[in-house]
Length: 305
Image (cartoon, rainbow, N blue to C red):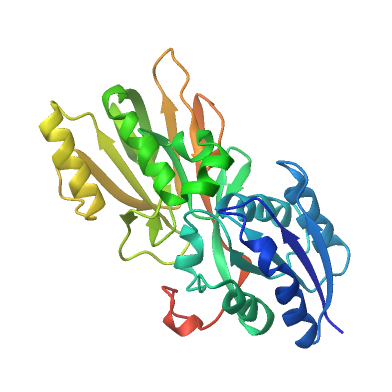
């Protein structure tokens, strides 16, 4: 009998996963699995528990929570020599990476995918010695994802992020940065930057022509607009995935270094969680590093074998 290690964040999203927990476990048992359940107890608990699952003979790791919980589990798997397939039951406020994997938002359907789906090796981001599944970002609004309280997110869901963002429009500041990738060096003042491997970011920015396993990430940088009208135009272009805007720089790479040239620290977000305030930030792509369980790999943006 195969064994599932089931990590659950009971407070993710609107805390709806707790109402489905019994049915999900029953689904796994009916599909022939021995199930061990662990509910997360602290911010880094999922990291340790994911590593435990890899190192103690479990066949699958199933994660029920938001993008942050999944990211923590990914850290534990990447730190382990034996990397077991990850099934994901999205239960957060945005669930960006689940959309990229084609995982249903319905909890029971997602559980079925985790039980009987097929593993697909996906790229994983490296960020200053840690890891991310789909995004590392700095600048305007990126603090919202980890500073908005869990209580507010549980009540208002994705709308909580938008409301917090609206309050920060007047305080956007540009940061002097150096971006290095291969022979390319870019310097300037930027209000936003992100390195992504996803179909969407924060449920709003839609990305096109990306692949989950091609060994490259998409880098999007937004220079400081000259006035509020130009800021609005650039923001609209970003939301429409129009990378021809004069303030937007876009390229693909497997390795990029982003350096803060100012005297003031600035923070990063990594999969919606706090990512630190390092001066020099080294980001790389680990190609086909971890297997994720999906429903139909033929319908996903994957590199042809």
